[in-house]
Length: 243
Image 1 (tube, rainbow, N blue to C red):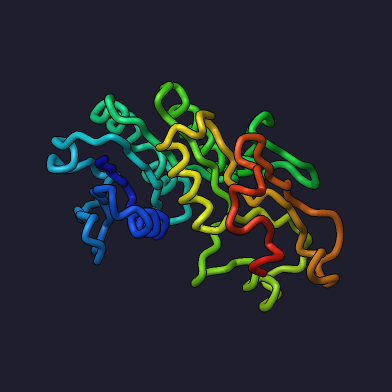
Image 2: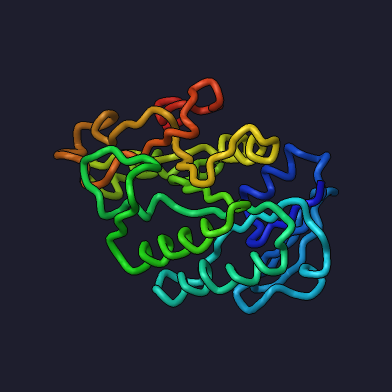
């Protein structure tokens, strides 16, 4: 099986590492991979996909949006610039598009899942919502809305708790990298068929559950999934395991 990863990064590298039986072609602005089953092509995909990428055939295309900054134009370039090109050039491949729970940023102190419509609180979130809508027009596309990514090297929950980066109470919407990879594998094995999936640990908690310094009602939403929530499928079921 041959997989194209546009915006190759940490999740793609972990996926390729645990699946040496698969062949990967990855695009990234700079850098390489030491894995034998990965070929990296250095380019800025927002400027257009190179011919050497387009000419090949792939079973799956994974798109990880990358932005060069935090402004609205950066988000438009990162999320929207190549959607049509990806769908047109790889029409025979199945595709997984990575999105973000940022589309729920307008909700406070409530629980949301895939049945709840997005409610972004800023233009960047609106761009991500537009991106999802464009992707979901095609039946062979999947959208995975990721919460905050946690790895062995990077744990935003620990950082917030240790450094007290803020004291406003929030729900902790996180997902460990291995559980993202597990879900991608299940989709490719046809064990998950839902087009839109929130990718979040199945047990939600608040920062105040760990430290009373975080006061008040949560200013954000607890993101849940009705499609990926079986505790037995997760390596890390709760923030308690890795806080």
